[in-house]
Amino acid sequence: MYRFLLTPRWWGINVFAVLAIPLCLFMGSWQLSRFEDRVDTHQQQEDRSARAKTAAARPLADLLPVNTVTSGRQTSARGHYDTAHQLLVPARTLKDRHGGQQGFYVLNLLRTDSGKALPVVRGWLPGDAGAKAATARVPAPPKGEVTVTGALQASENQGTDGVQAGGGLPQGQLGMISAASLVNIVPYEVYDAWITLTDAQAPLHAVPPAAAEGSGLDLKAFQNLGYTGEWFVFAGFVVFMWFRLFRRDAEAAKDAALGIVPEGDGGGDASRTGERGERQAGGGDATAGDVPRGEAKADERGADQGEGRGEAARAGKA
Image 1 (cartoon, rainbow, N blue to C red):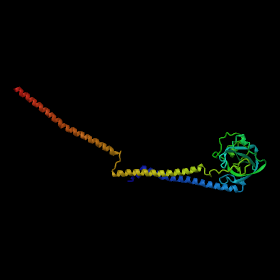
Image 2: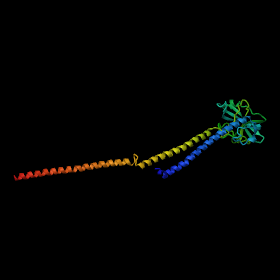
Image 3: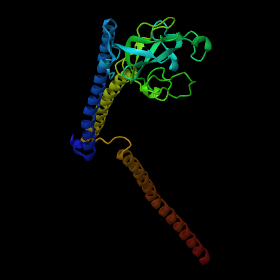
Image 4: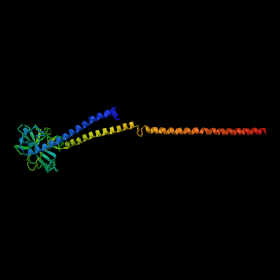
């Protein structure tokens, strides 16, 4: 009854199912592992951030280049501020008690003894970076040689929250904190990193360090979780469709073995053909029955004509 499984059509169905189901399960498991990795790195990043707040600051050179391990670590650098290139980073929102209010970062470049400059976010102020009333509150950076301490951060990119990578900002404003953005603004080399000061100069508010890219429970993490569910649903759908096709063909084979012809196949046409044959046969019988009656009428007319001729002959003799 299951010989239909050996047909070319079912060979194709079986091969597809054997390949598709493991593939879907593998991809779903891989997406789930990616989500779990992001959860683990998020927890590790939070633990490192908590330890970094109490840990002693390390020299900048010991923590470069910035990665998921060194991001958020306390570092220190020594040099003097470039007061001629103070920049404002507009449309930035803090994620603490000031999270509901938009403002701007105040950024200065610290010229170090190595010859490179380190971007330093001295703090955040509420308001519009283009408004004179807001910018008038920005305090001047300290003069002379200073030692700064803050949380190390990786250069921003176009996917970072708050970044304005399209350009078109007024002079004195910066849309993205990165060495690539600063290279055309200042005439010296810039570290591919920046720090946010732990203690901000009043009235500035300290900017908390952001989690390293790819280490937080962001939209990408939940996309991995959604893809996990989709791949497992695909695997279940393949199994469901295989059993549905199998049951349909198995029932058809069973009916054929019992001699049952489904409605709408050959049975209905045969019945209609039989009915037409019976009607035609009945019509032939009726015609055959009419022939003797016609012959009987002809005989009666002949008899009448014979009787008329006999009467005429007797009348002539008389």
